[in-house]
Length: 245
Image 1 (spheres, rainbow, N blue to C red):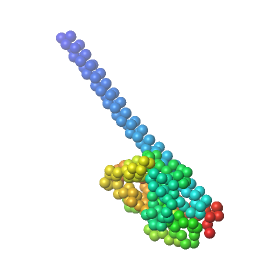
Image 2: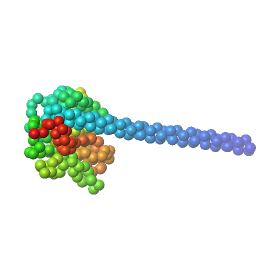
Image 3: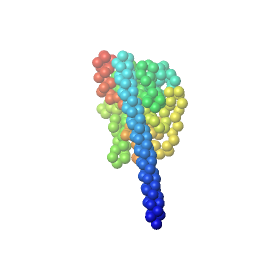
Image 4: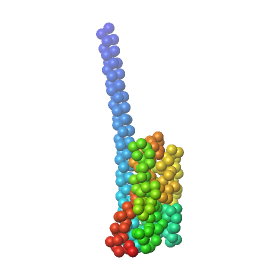
């Protein structure tokens, strides 16, 4: 009988040890998944920060170009040629394309290897820019607390008394849309990302809001990055360089 009790106790200890080992392995697995997710989020945050830095550098280069030339540049010739297009752009659609990175001497791609988009009001690509009659046309909207779109830059109507922005820079982010540095268009794999879809076809009105991976959020999942240039900043730079009539 004593021998039987010893054997039963030994088996209970073995089962307990096995259970502890299983719990330990489960904890390690969960920790690994958590670390992987944190690393992924950290990597995406780092790329977003890198992209915003490149966009800020591009905005500074655009200001420098305007100070030197009395106007803003036209979009790039193509996805594979970063020189400013030779032909004038006279419509909002024609003045929306890729950042002319070679002409500006900056990196033309975001941190995900997609070309930065650039949309400029046509009148600001023609010299001289006449402050008394030229209207900046670009707007940027955000999602308010109620999920509705609200203007962050500009308003529904742009005129001399209520100016909008002269240009907008856009990164399509990690997921969906955009064109790679090799000139390959990237597909959209999300049917509910209506704000990203709007940006993909925009030439005047853009949407810039906080990143959200939730497909059920107002406007759908979103990871675009948008940067505009205040008209007052452009005029101040051009005036300092004596480039405003």
